[in-house]
Structures are given as C-alpha cells and as structure tokens.
Length: 222
Image (cartoon, rainbow, N blue to C red; front, side):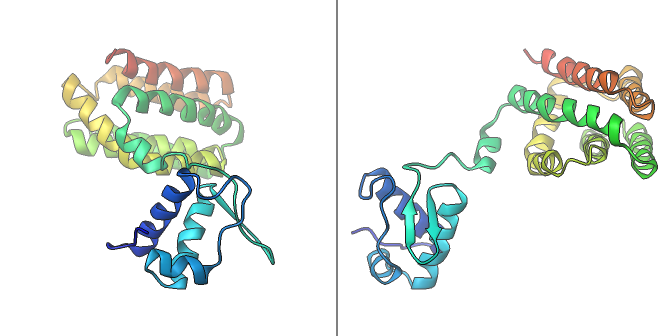
C-alpha cells in the first residue's frame, strides 16, 4: 500500500485517496473506511485524513453525511482551477475575459452607484497616466476592469475575476510584449466610451464596448 512521504501531508493524502478512487477501490456511492483504518494505510494521522477528505469534498469527489460517514459521489475530480489558468494560452484567457467582463459591464451599467462611478473614473485616470511601462500599464488596466466588475455587484463575477488575475496579468504582459504597442489614444478612448455607457446606464452599449475591446485584443493574436 502506497504511503505519504512528502509535504504537504494533506495534499499527498488527498492525492492518494483520489488515486485509489480512480482505480475503482470504492464504487460510486460507496462508503469509505473510517479514519482509524485509512490513517495507517496512508501513513498519516487521523487529523490529516480528515483534512484530505475535506479537500476532496471541496473538489466534489467525497461527501460527509452526518452520522453516516464519508461517501464517494464522483469517480474523478475536475482539474484544479488554478492549474487550468496556468496552462491557458493568451487567446483562451482573453475569451474567458469576454465571458466575464461583458456581462459584468452590463450589470455595472444597471447597478452602479455614485461610489462605483468615482472608483471607475479614478481607475480610468490612473490607467491613462501609465502608458509607457508594460507592467505598470497592465496593473492599472487590471484595476480599471476590476472596478467595472465590482460595480456589477455580483460577488461570483468578482470572485472569478480575482481568481483569474494572476494568470490574466501574465497573459496580458506577454501579449503586449508580442504586440510592442499599447496605451495609445484609441485604446484609452475605447475605455472612456465604456465608462460613458456605464454612466448613462446603457447596458447594451456597456456590454458591446467591453466585448469589442476584448475581441480586438483577441483578433490581434489569431
């Protein structure tokens, strides 16, 4: 029986349990052995087994049922979101941005508050003064787009955007280095037009301008 040998123990224990589930040791809907059985098999303590089970439950593989035990509810786990983002190419990242930000822009136009507008305008002005250095331009651009997503008042969209940010930053820096041109007046005007649509509560225009801007980025690469 394979045992855990490296840190972090809970991650290793979860990986070994998932490996055994994939191998068919427990069928769909079957109850796992108790912690006192699994712990010596994996070479870890009971608390580590509990944490490993929590991690697999979070990935939709296991479910704890109070008073009944832990059951297999899926025979595999989807790839970790962070790993998916790390592998994603620039075009895939921009297409995902289109899905998130187009809807967020429409919602921002419908729901924005005076405080939201101040944040968006401040971010637009900051973006305007960071046109010469790629890294600072990408950071200012990301802050602008986050301000728009935040104005949607949709916590799920904002969580998606925030989880996306590290890969987004790397992809955008890579893209701008390939293009070698960024931050021109047309680019700034496109962002300003999106702000105008949000100010005017024009949901259709806000969404269309967000989508058009991001499609321009994508089309420059394909």
